[in-house]
Image (cartoon, rainbow, N blue to C red):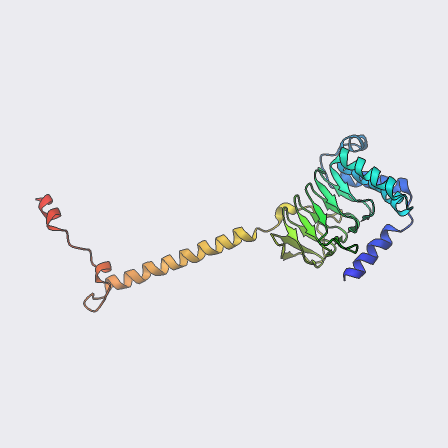
Length: 263
């Protein structure tokens, strides 16, 4: 699965598409994923995530043309003005949208499919110093919540959602939701995407496994307390002559001091 998705992303990235057509898609995809966008000029002038992607398109072409120093200089300049660090060798598909775009890091061997959405603080990082494939591969329509870290040469399938602040270190099958540290698959949505644009941005609907576990514990405690009350009721109704819990069932007699105080 890893090789298949990786080869698919590379073939999509290498498909013949005009440079201006790429930029046009990068800008106009914002309208489908950010209701705050009102015009093309607003996006071009104020969206640092779009600026980072547009400049990466140039630096990546310089890198592929073996102008590596120029590509790194342009990537460093882009990082200074956008707070987004994208290595020029990273392979990025069509219509990537980086929302808010603060502290996003995309490593050298990272591969990103089409229609991917990243929020601020996302890291696509490596886990080795060896010169090999060491960064993650993201399929199409992937949504990564703010602060999430995806580490290592792992693969996230198509339509995967990653919850905010999660740390993903293992492969994730398509159409799944991952949350937690380390990331765990908590929901499989199937192959259908509900959003009419084909992009699932309902990250506020991600289940809360910790809250669910606490709710189950509270429910279990209520059951135990109800059973304990029932047991006490049975003991009170039975004879205490043969019961070792007489001190619990039968009220204790008042001490002589309390009896004298009533007089």
